[in-house]
Amino acid sequence: MDLTGKIENLVLPLLEELGLELVDIEYRREPHGWVLRFFLDKEGGITLDDCAAASRQLSSLLDVEDIIPTAYNLEVSSPGLERPLKKRADFERFTDHLVKIKTVDAMDIDGSGKRRKTISGRIIGLSQDELVLALQDRQAEVRIALSNIDTAHLVPEF
Image (cartoon, rainbow, N blue to C red; front, side):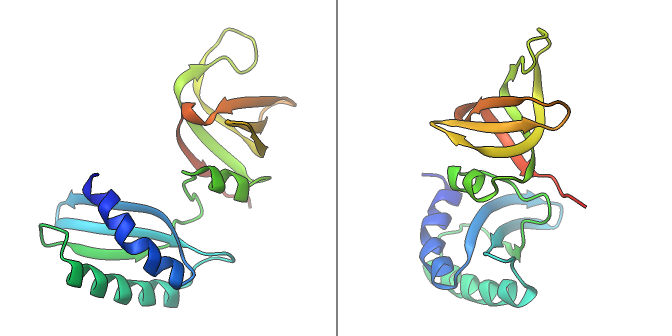
């Protein structure tokens, strides 16, 4: 298991106790040094006070467990308006929202023979192991295997 996987296993019980959802973890070197970044959310949206409380708790837990081999800066924030969707539960939760999907393998979504990797649409739901989208640019549906999704994120609606 990689380091972010170990960190995730360590912090999940704490975050659940705080009523927070772990959306993503980043641990990477940046110009000013190593950064451990948590993206958190909760039903109704996360507040600045939630982030501050989570930061204090995470910092204490990580200091005690000492599983990170280098000095790092800890950051806790919301996933933002373009929240990434990573798990099956994310796609279920955000049914009827606009998304932008990048696939691993290009797809011919309209029968034209033109293959593309970027697909935008509104989540209709899940069927077996496929995401069902209503295409944004035409009156059609497309099914994308969850295993073919490289990245997915919400598209803000204004």
